[in-house]
Structures are given as C-alpha cells and as structure tokens.
Length: 205
Length: 205
DNA sequence: TAGATTGTTAATCGATTAACAATC
DNA sequence: TAGATTGTTAATCGATTAACAATC
Image 1 (tube, each protein chain N blue to C red):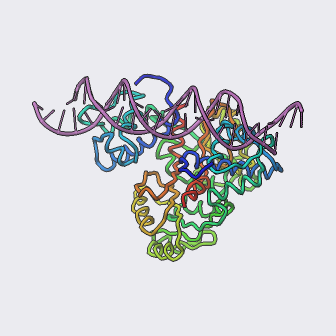
Image 2: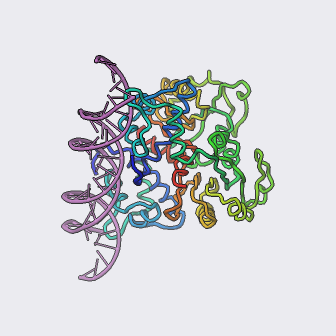
Image 3: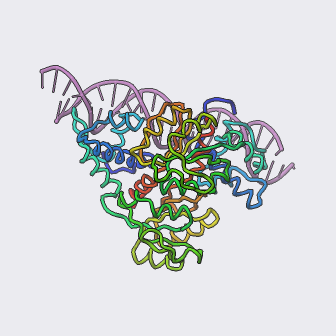
C-alpha cells in the first residue's frame, strides 16, 4: 500500500486486470471480487489482492471492488488515463498491418507517424498516414517529444534503429523484430515474437 | 541434467537461446560461451548454464559451447527439429498479415489453412491459401491431426473458437485476441497482446 | 446480526545467483 | 602447464499463497 518499488512481474499483470474489468463492465457488472477475477484470469485471488495492495485500498470488505472505480484507479497507476502518441518504424507487411489495427487507438495509443527507409515505401498511404523517410524521424520525435515507438523492421536493422530512437529520447519500445535489443536501463522494451511463443509450446507437444 | 519437470520460465527462455545461436552462426561464430550469450541476452551466465543443465551437458570446460551443436540440441529439446503444420483462424487485417509473415515458415511452422466465418472473406486468396468457412475446420484439423492453431479473431468470438479448437484436438494456441482464454490444463496458450505491452511500459513513463 | 470479502502478515515455495571443483 | 569455462551446489533472493483479523 506504500510507494515502494513494485516489481515488473506485478506491473505486467495490471493490464490484464484492466482488460478484464473492461470486459466485466461491458457485460453489465458493476461489482466484482478478487475471487471472480481470479477465476476469469486463472490465477489466485490472493495474488490479485496483493498486487492491488501495492497501490492502495480499492475494495470494500464483504462487498468486493467497484468495477468502474477500480478501472479508473488502474488507468491512473498505469498512466493510461491519458492519450499517448506513438510512432511506428517499419512499413512492411507487419508495419502496415499494425497501422491498420484499431486496438491501439481504442486504448488511447494514437499512431502519429510511420517511417521506413525504403524509397519504394516512402509516400505510400497507410490508413490515414503517409510513410515518411527515416530522415524525417528525428524532427518528429523531438518536436513532439514522443516517448513511445513501435519497431517493426527486419532483425538486421533493429538494433541500429533502436539506438537512434533511444538517442532521440524514446523511452518505450514495442519490439516486433526477432532480436534482443541492447538499450540503457531507463528504456523499456516489450518483446513480441510469435515464433518464440510457438517454439515454447511445441516443447509440450 | 535429469528428466525432471522443468519450469515454464525455463522453457520460455530456450527459444531465445536458440535465436541467439542462429544469429551468432550467421555472424560466423562456431564457438560461444555462457558469458557471451549472457551479455547478448542481458541475463546472467549462471542462469544460462543452469537452464541448459536441466537437459544435458552441452559444453566443454575451458572452451564453451559449439554453436551448431547446441542449436541442434535445443531444437530437439523444443521439438522444432521437424516441421509443424499450423492453422490460422481469423482472416481480418491481422490474420491476413500473419498469413503473409515469412518468419513462421522460416522456423518450420507451415501455415496449411485459413478459416473465417464471414461470407465476405470466404474464398479470398491470402498468399498461397484460400480462406475457408468455419464449417470446413473440423475435418481439416481431424484429418491432418493438427495440434497448433493461431487465433486471430475478435475478442468476443475467441473463447467459442478456442473451445472448438480444443474439442478438435488442438493442443497449442497462439492467441492474438485480447482476452484470457479458458482451456484445459493440457492445452497451452501463448498470449500476444501489444496493448498489454504498451500499458505495462507507460507505467514507467 | 450473519455472511462475505478485503488487506496484510507470515510461511512457503520457487527462481536466481555466487562460487568453485572439475576439467578441457 | 596456465588459463578458461563448464556443471553444480548451496545460499540468497524474490514471488506466491494460506490464513485470518478487520470490517463492510
């Protein structure tokens, strides 16, 4: 319940709680409990209560949690009670698919620019945006003080692009390139590699 | 070094080791060490040695690991020393992008069919495949004894589709739908939700 | 009130790491 | 041989859980 450093593993679960609360709200629920959440999320109720307790007291004994209230609290904690501008680097198949994905904007992540270094791709229209050359990237990031980037370039190019992004002030990278990036500790990287997921699962087959 | 149950957290790191070994091999390295791997992957060398030790002794004191040999061993352990056939359910923007992604086949995951329930989408050509209706799904999975599915349908449809896949014998689901699925314990689910990644990172901004 | 559920503690469980003998 | 690095142990560290007083 105090402001002590909270571990990564706890932080990574908060978005799952938030997502479930949105789901319950859509289903018309106004109240829930750590027990109900734990069943839906397949974890223990003690874990949910403990995770939340790092940030405050959000429930009522005997009753549980108000769905809308806890949602609001989680948004504040995660800093998603505001919109974030995001750039996308890489306009290949994956990059263009990500640019079309509605789920980002639906959660307050607004794609404001797309970059690629291939002359063929520069100038292409992707959704509401036009692909810009990498030379335009520094001004865009600096002028708009952007902090979040999505990286969807080939593995061989990823580290160099990451270096540039970090240099420009980017603090969070959603990395789709199948490579572990080397970045300073103050920069966060979240890795998405479907092949890693498949290879983990085949172990059990 | 024995065949005891190895924890999920260890299994999930093995694909990262494999990926790094492929990278080192491409870079012309024939030998590496737990130290070198640990620096590239940003973890401790002791952890890497311990993880590998659950499965055997793959290195040589004083020398390190043969890159090609360790790669082969990891492939065997993860059961990716063979090709796997995979189906994709959902032919929206995301599904079609995944169908075009070359990275699956490059690692031995062959997409053999795509399904969707929207009449508009059925019959569309996506890469080398034609979108089939969901009514065709049972026969495909059963006849080919498929075990792996990629789920790229809207959140509201995901649980119902997952139930059907499990019923048909699917044992591993790569889930792109932003929802926690309820499946029996013998079925593995790997979750990919970029919004969850972004929301975890904004906590630190 | 009786019943239910929180927030928190202490115990347990599991994962990581430091250190080093073995040995290439 | 001297130097290097593994595989493994034991210690440390951190995360999860069981349990319950507090209280709505």
